[in-house]
Image 1 (cartoon, rainbow over the protein chains, first blue to last red):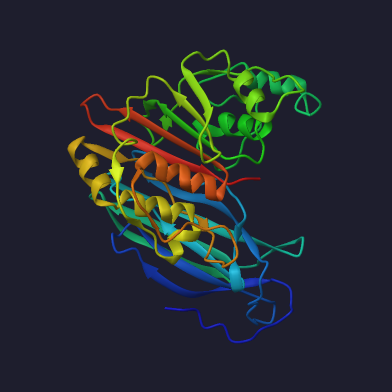
Image 2 (cartoon, chains in turn brown, yellow; image 1 turned 90 degrees about the vertical axis):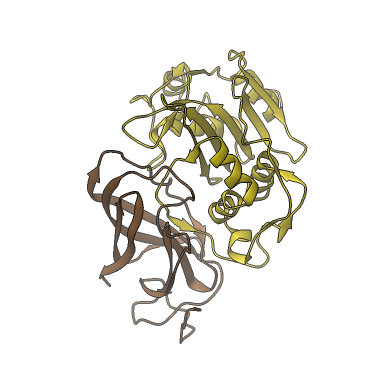
Length: 142
Length: 222
């Protein structure tokens, strides 16, 4: 499903909304696309955006801990940020049972300026009997 | 430049490591065992693609594979970056360091007897998202039939890790071709690292029951 951004704007990045999502057919992760918006909710669809996530682990339950990627800026063409929510991999040695909840915020860089978005997203990743049964993102603060 | 940027701290980091040293600045969020390695490579061999291949020790408390100790020397000036890298790691006789034909610096631990890296993979296809993303390209590699078979035959699994932001398709930016033919697992990784630059750390370990684990972690260029 393609994002349905509506308005092209020259405003500055202020927040993001979930534009689309789809499941990895092997069940490890859900790919989310967030549309960058200005403070009025207009979609920013130009080129030259990059984004970096800030992730804080709020809750962990399980025998093993798993690493998170190093924060880095990635390209967000047309103002679309792509996020792999869940486990990055395939045919992995999954833990038997685990619950991890992360709080995610995003910084967007555009024309040399960094803009921390107001949007806060909660990621919940649940592994049960070595299957990823939940891998979703939920906006808790626009 | 390295010395000017803090000789004291750098020496502290460059002596040896097995676990992350509290004396070294953290590369936030990265796998703990790789932090100093990646930090030092970025200092010594900046803006150049690197593939590290090593065995390690499986960690029972996490899905991290701990690297063996590495001794670092502060490189001297006046040489090209590759020579500096070789000098910096020159104390480690078990490390092979060379530049691959694709331009990637390969740091390989001699004791790594990988059966996964040399397997042949024909006609590996990437969709548009995979062409622009290291993470998704690696998953495409793992899903290829020869890799799945080898992993099954060897009772081998990859170490799980959490996802994160990835680059979206962006025409005009570096990206992989739609299909790679006549490759090996290793040469596919080299193609990915060569295309996107950055540092890839590939590790294998064995569990007590004989099962094998491997991990691959990509660190974006800075």
